[in-house]
Length: 109
Image 1 (tube, rainbow, N blue to C red):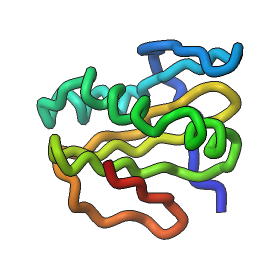
Image 2: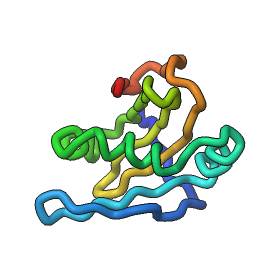
Image 3: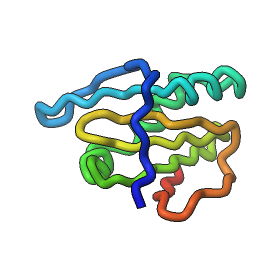
Image 4: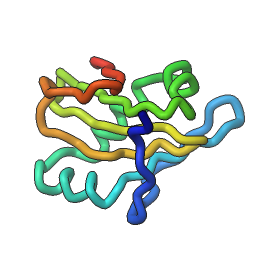
């Protein structure tokens, strides 16, 4: 089951390099809307993604899996996927204890 989607409307937030490979973090229009509605801090969202660390980011690249990151300390969740060297933020939630769709990998921070 292919669960990730390329969003027509997205913008680049940040880039970073791991072993001479540059990744970029993008946010979908949907996620931007949810970020605003739920009054979440974009820096914390990006921080949660970066906290996955080098190995997890490299291992999830091109797996066709959605990643559900639960930040229990800050009480939010972010759903993203990694295709090629782009990390796409699909949506954000203002709680950490959420239902997770089957086939989605969950990472608790």
